Length: 483
Image (cartoon, rainbow, N blue to C red; front, side):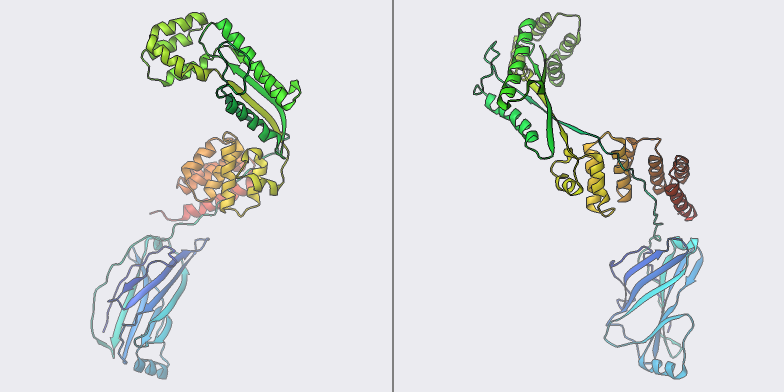
């Protein structure tokens, strides 16, 4: 009997994939893995062929299982698995019969599952990339044909894409000589009408003053930081005369300076101040974001530098009408009476252990080089490694090196190349490392001509070792047949 069953297997490295049951649920294929060597020359096939418990084989029968590859009229026959019934096995051993191109011989154990780990290697040929892997099952009994059946299609997929090992370029950031940092905030202090004295218990002043002190205390009490200066900038709203608002802004700003100086007993030289009589910039942002009527006319008045400030305020009040102007007085002007403060400080150099301790809590204290050292101490491609470069790009969003390294990390983890491109767009476009990494993206995306241009440019810019490695990888890609 001759029974031929053609089965297509996935030519991808699927380890532990879903088993395929064949030949009337009597033969099963498990854990098929088909890979190609890095030099593109050797194809390795590794799978388990399982004879199920319900596979019945008479004592005088033999089953021959022959895998083969087939594509475009070409065929590569692989070694066969010979399964004997009890009598046929005895005869075979007595006659010392071993068919040619045999992988293994076994005797069928009735009502038991038998597994064969099938592992073969062969030279890789270009046509094999899109080949189907099939299985012929010939069932014979004393040279008589008992039954014959046609093939059954299971699945069809392409062979494993070429796995590239590009040389990705990172840049080690330079150390900061002094790590200058700053914390900014705004306080909205309440003053009685036309008064310039701070009453700490008046309205919301208790909480607003506490907010300022908390910012200063965070810096003063930190073992890593040293307070260097405080800057305060006070603003008044456009309500009222410009002359009076100048007096209020100046003196209320000084009042806050005096409060902070006396509370902490600071040297007066530690604190600098400035003031803006009327916060027209803040008023413009409010109007631009609003849906008020005649908004465009109001914006034109605000932007007109040739109008006296007091006249400008009156013209706006007349333009919008009493009801809208009352809304502005209640909802906008109070927010324009504010004191912005900046607390400047320096951060001492941190050890690797200290850097690791605070990267997730206070990453703003770290320099770009300190974050890079954390990544260097981690396994490349690990979660901690990737996280370090993500933090660096977040804390230094416009820094060319931070973005170069973040882009390199995205390439290395096989992430979204769109994200990698966005980071690399902020890197130094003439840097050899940037050129190299852009070449890798082009190679991954199949633009091999552009990739070669990038790699050659990177090599000319001094990145010889990585560029040469990538040019070799590119050659593999060029020799790899494209469907």
